[in-house]
Amino acid sequence: MPSSHDFLERCDKLAVMGGTFDPIHNGHIAVASAVLQEFKPRRVLFVPGGQPPHKPDIPVSDGEHRFNMTLSAICENPAFDASRMEIDRKGPSYTVDTIAALRKICPAGAKIFFIIGADALMEILSWHGAEKLLSLCEFIAVHRPGYELEKKYVKNLREKYGAVVHIFEGPLLEISGTQIREKFAAGQAVGGLVPRVVEDYARTHALYNMPAPNLSQSNFETVKQRICSVLSKGRFRHTLGTIIEAEKLAAHYGADVNKARWAALLHDCAKEFSTAKKRVLCAHWCIQLDPILASHIDITHSLLGAESACRDYGITDPEILQAIACHTTGGANMTLLDKVILLADFIEPYREDYPPLAEMRRHAYTDLNKALRIGMEFTINELLERGHAVHDRTRDALRELS
Image 1: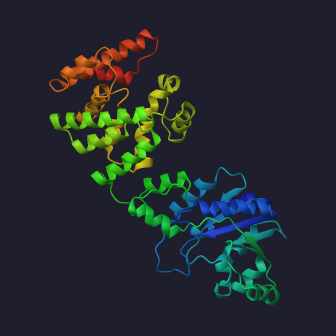
Image 2: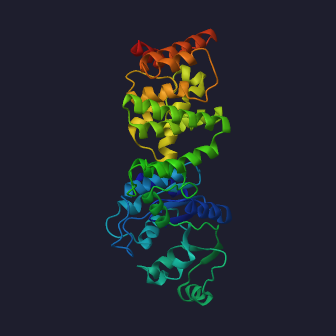
């Protein structure tokens, strides 16, 4: 076997969880965690299957993707690991072959549990190599509260086939892979059903026929309600003002009004994340922190906002995401949409008065660059007066606006 299984050579108590894991979900992980606590194996090994022999005509996602999602979901638990032995094996995936292979790797006499749903246990005699499988490992039959196992059937497995069957009441999480795939395909939220890293992976690789971003007015109203629920009243009022101004500016200068509306709605979606959360998310989402961003982490709310707009609200339009990402510092080569959002943020109608506000508003609909230049010069002077560094992106933006 490949060296990736070397750790099993010292594992004398192993629990195996099989499945297509298309995708792995929180129900799988909850069951594995419960088994770990109750039966105390040294490892719980997740084994994504190849082509299920009992579903030969049902397509499943590429094995590499399913393995990557599985490993990403469980890798932080020191007792969990994943094997690619079934996705690398040609032909149908038979559990008996997997358990036999593990028997050759684990120490002689190792205790191997196979985690199985109670409903699947009731069909096990129809499985390929069932009698051999029943002799190779012990079974942890996980059932839900209220599910009645046929006691005569289990008794027959024990007495006729010598099977060791542990009946285990698992956590009550009614989650199915079909349900999750349908939600992905419909563009619906899957929070609480799969680990965040799995959701991100599936969206990044468009695994489940996810629709194009829904930028309709009805979806806009739905997302607006979500934004209202997570922002403070003052911040949401600012957001509404930015939407109003962005729509007007976009229409006046010929930018895409709908994209301006969406960028304005989501531009501050990460603004009220805590300082600690901003710092951790920058690490999780691979946002590079230069010295200025690292020392003034709040500036990253625009970069985090673009990521959150994509990850949490399903926005993938690059122009919208860029406009969100640069609305705090500006940057070189700003597009018309970037400028519209930046200026709308500066001058929205609910803004409390500050020195250059009236002058910016006066030039907003006659000279976009001049209005922005006034705002950015004021911002730079304020930063310098407070002894703060000015980010290179802001200097680049001002240079191009001059």
